Image (cartoon, rainbow, N blue to C red; front, side, top):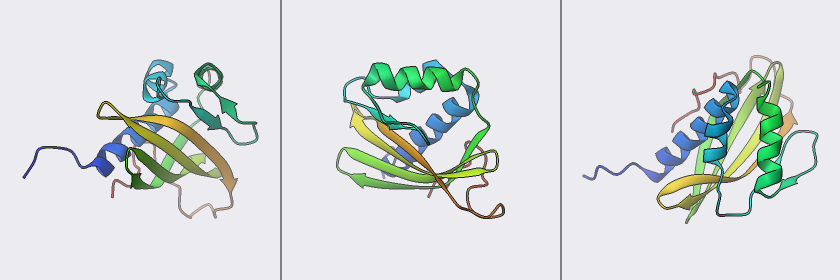
Length: 138
C-alpha cells in the first residue's frame, strides 16, 4: 500500500476547493487555484470568453466582490495524462448550470486552466441541489 492520494481524489478535492473559494468570495484562494504557468480561459454564463491570467482573474475579482450563493453536486473526474476534467452541476439560487473545470498537473498539484458554466434545465428537486463542498467524491 502507498500513502499517495489517488489522482482522481486529488482532482476532486481541488475542484471542491474552487467552489469553496467561489462561495466564500476568497480571491486569494481563487487566484491560487488557477495556473500561473499555463494559458487560462474562463466562460461565465452569458459572457464572452475571458483569455489570459489578467482578464480571467479580473473577472473573478468582480464576481467575488459579492459572491453568489453557489453550491455544486454530481462531480465526476476524468484523467487524461497531466490533464484532469471535472464536470458537475452548479446551483446559484434557482438556477442550474452545467460546469466543466479543466486542470493541469503542475509540480504534483492540479491547477485550473479553464472553467465554463452554462444554464441547463433541471427540475427544482433534481440533480444539483448539493451544498458547496458536498460534491460527489466518487
